[in-house]
Length: 543
Image 1 (cartoon, one colour):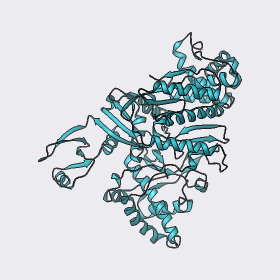
Image 2 (cartoon, rainbow, N blue to C red):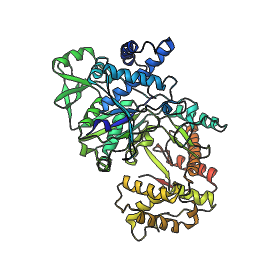
Image 3 (cartoon, rainbow, N blue to C red):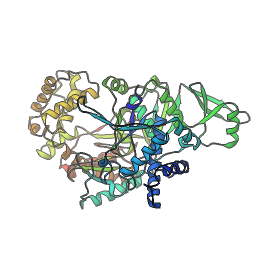
Image 4 (spheres, one colour):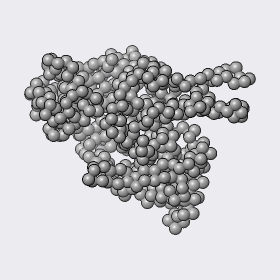
């Protein structure tokens, strides 16, 4: 494994005001000042450089705990007001000064980025902590800090972005009441406890376990229960209660969420190290063979990750019961439920909800979500975009199964046609539709011929069957449909919040505590009819 290929994106949206971070930041800042006296002249500039240093140190700590490097841009445009690193003090000159100084002093290893046009390969610059820095991380208890993500500002609750993800400054009057509704929802949902409780039979991928590791380190998730094949029960002399412990790499650990000084000295004598559930989970996942990361891409709000190669992606994304990984129980609490909406280029394109941890959870994991200790139910608008086209654009009802006749000769092809239509409706033209379908089938490991001809045949068959809406397929209508989908979601969340019922969205589906299914169903019907017209949507219960 090439360690420089395994990278996560530098994250500026992490809270840095912790005693451990301040102390180490103060120490290393003095060394940076010695090298850059002529460039850091005013108290204001010293403060901003120090804040920049703290964010970089936190990221290096995260990378070290995860066994990954940190990737970042050395292009000035990435630090503009409306681009990726949106911090008042996080500017190009300061970031480069801090990183280059840390490398010069010997605290980081660094690789410059490159763009190989012949091979079609490009990489951003990457860095990782050296042993010299990790010794200081340990000395200042850096790895015990419970990190957390900053909440977005009120203005950022509704964002308008260009195609390249940069923010557009222009604001619209309609955004202000939208922000107020999202803010009201966010303040309500932050008071609710949202927890996933996974037993040994729940199927997940290695990809998911690695992603959760990063989210736990960043403070987006809290590991509340973790039991594995490495569990052991530890009883301490003179103390009646027993403690959960574990053994990793021939070292014994005891889980103590609160570190008591009287116990610490005894543990040192018997060579047992203190740990916690998050550290146990991280260490356990790190011992599993291989890590397959390339880009942990995110727009500072969403985390998406891709594997380095197709072979690695296949093995990393294959779902297996937790028991196959030696895990008996895995419970985690969402520590980031904050939502925001993103519109694309124009205020009537896109507008989906993003941000909250649960949005990225796989379907089989979402089945095990508990809200305030209650099991949940998830209701979904069936074939949402297809039915919206029939209802809104053609003003005609459509309650049929849109895939049934397409695969009546071979029911096994149902999953193929679902993906074909899903991708094609959101594509801008036939060429991008075929490419998108191929990528989707490959990503989902669907056994099908991925050359152009059979994919185009499926696409043509779908358009022939749905000939009434064929002009909308691969027409670029997808962002308009997302706009209406977002408006429906806005109504659903506003009404449920007003009723005091916790409700969390996953684009076209919604999750509520058990016992509130009928209220949610009625609200979803009402929202759909208010936006799309007087048609009855097909609402399905996710099983």
